[in-house]
Image (cartoon, rainbow, N blue to C red):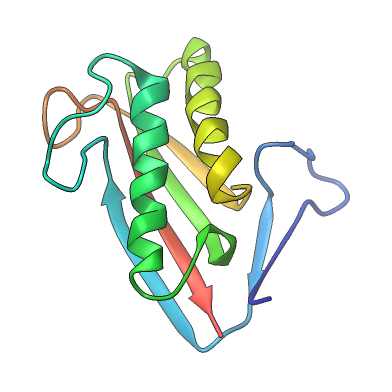
Amino acid sequence: MTVELLNPAGLPAPDIYRQVAVATGTRTVYVSGQVARTADGTPVGPGDLAAQTEQAYRNVAVALAGVGASLTDVAKMTVYVVDLAPEKMALFGEGAMRAAADLGLVTPAITMIGVTALGEPDLLVEVEATAVLP
């Protein structure tokens, strides 16, 4: 295992992510921001944050598979959400958990950042990842 995920004593211990990722490997993989598009560029889930989150996570998994990695190799994710507000957290979590149900549990260190817009007007979320391989 190249990535150890943990919640150290003295910090909150959330269920949906870990506070710290310790990575020991020889290759680092940087996945650029993935959005709610299929391989041919078709938009997924217009106006639906949960559906867009699920597709973005699926695209991260595809990108990782392309270099022989998986979501379990991810040490850190950064998530950008348009007009981030507390009520959007449940929708984000719903999409992430739907993807995790068949892709593997996704609980790395994570940072969520609210933005006013992404690269295209219909996009609600973008997910980038850093993975470490042996």
